[in-house]
Image (cartoon, rainbow, N blue to C red; front, top):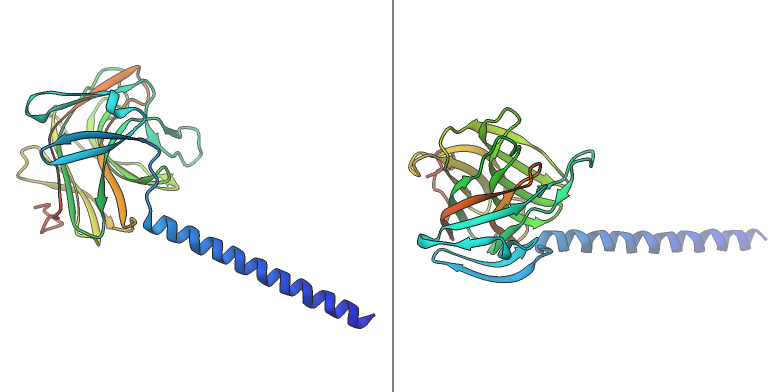
Length: 247
């Protein structure tokens, strides 16, 4: 009888060990996928400008843009469209349209655009946005946004499971130049009024996977709809040389 129970215990430990190994293996595989892959729930598109090629449209973005002279893009967004993972879940939303371009994150990159959002009295959180996107749980958005007091300010939101929310400088001009840059190790976001003097608003370690997507978006979390104008859009395979000055 003792031998029987001893064998049962040994068999149970063996099964538990195998299960633990399977779970460890699953975790390792999941982490490897997260490390090396980007998952974009969008559709293929083919929107070429001289300095960027958008090949993925999220939430019907390709049907919401109009290309004008000098490669200006008028980008519309419908009502209550946003990308945000609220810590308590109440405000979570993944409906904002995005135009995205694939980027090799093992190489330096810089995305730049002149952004002019449509700000209105009721357009709380209306914004023109630049993105680094991996999946719905891992991204950064960089916004020229209308705040609760009607101010137009620079905002950064970084999402890793849930989103943070960082309000930066107020900008009085209707347009602002925005830039996200990486040397493969560091990511930083900047804005400028004249495209010469850049103000850094956020800097952190580049922990994104080898393949990422970058692009533009318009959001309208509260109102019935809005649009943003994007000009001088450029995606380059180089980084700023001075991460504090953004030049």
